[in-house]
Image (cartoon, rainbow, N blue to C red; front, top):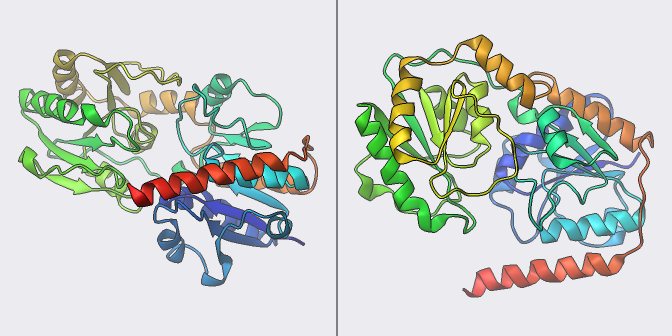
Length: 352
């Protein structure tokens, strides 16, 4: 039996995919793990502490001969150039490519997220509605949330300020955004902690506010120690709510995101107005949502909070066994085109 290849493009995607791989191993399906050649984002280090060493086979090789060793390719991102090259190779070989939805994502734009893999596993009904893709799409829940437990609020209020201005998106707005959030916390007389995304490169030391670095291994503990989370567009919105923390999505620059969060002003509030932000901080700390309100919100967005890994593993087994066929093509020129784009971007990062 050919192994199922899990391609982990970042440390975050390691946390998403490894639980599924463990369940497949338990069912007797061989599994191996790989990382990208040009952009690994600490995936190999995270794999080293989460899987047996012999299951890691190094970087993925963009060749038909190498990919033909596997029965399926499982990924958490199907829109990057290097990954699309691998998808094109797999399509030419008739190998299914299965993309597990990492989190809430922007379903708009030229990248056409979750439209390139042969099969997609979605976290809930809202995502299925936003994607509008029905062929080989399955609602499974999100494995990232399986292990998250709801915690009682800390005795001393603290606001988790998620600083995640990454990949060149809205980075020029970071300063004004942080200052507005800190002013709102001051207005509400509550302590704030700046929590920096591992790929946000700003120096936060000059804000005279506690600031911590985050990563996939510590973020849930940081959320647990908070009373309220303030963020721009982020996967932490749902992760925080799963932990029992209300969230304010603060979007003063009116960043356009095609995902319906369904803000209800109780579990999740949305505002573009810095003045309203201060009032929301006060009200959500004074009167936090109940567990029933949180459960009702999550039911709309997450199909399962405890069995998503199992659901994903079951669908992958069905796909590997040919239950959900797909149309393959022999457009190898696409594979080489996307590989060339990936190489060009990596060379640009190296030189500039």
